[in-house]
Image 1 (cartoon, rainbow, N blue to C red):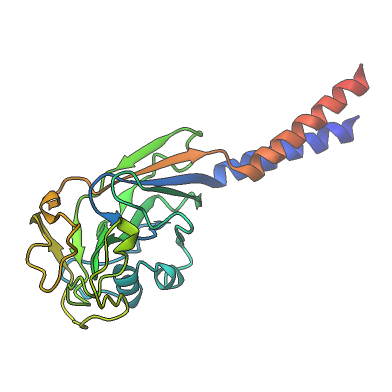
Image 2: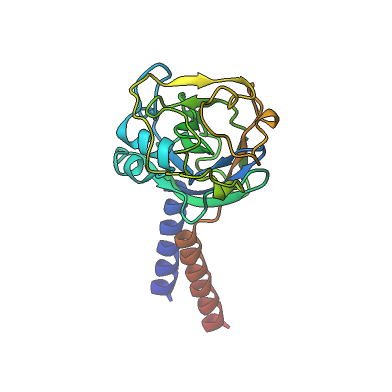
Length: 257
């Protein structure tokens, strides 16, 4: 009898320690405007990590994400102290309601959140946060706790000249590619990362615009491009142990009766 009680107590203690040591956080991304997003990169870290700095140069990982919507190099270059992943198959996200999600396992030191995603349809524009967002209120919180971010800052990575002839993702946002469209082409640049702002930001881009793309509907004056919601969800391993502990207690009570 004592062995059963001791075993059950150990299971409860182990489950409790797992719950306190890590948190499962689901990140839901939904587009809220007329532009789309490529697969989304998200990371939870201790605050010592930064995706980019305005006025600085884009890293190889950010360049690949901003030009082709590929987060793999950015994920691979992320320090081991960061819990990071690119959303797949959660993207690309179509304009006006495209959505996807990913669940991250976050430890007690990873209280800061960073994200990045390519703007579609562009050559190298992206959304991201240069300063990490404090999400300490979610780490260790009960399931259901949430935080919503509405990113509106759009940046030019400065790595490729804007040209719809070479912009990837046109069909993914419902646009007809112009004749000769080559998403792998484009003119290489080496300019600092710069903020893209104001109404009709595509108006000054040279060469052919898709006839079915109304650029006047787009305004990068700080309004939200997407909604990013972080929600604490149950941690499967911990709940399995708690369930096992519950079964142990149930068996013990039956033996007593």
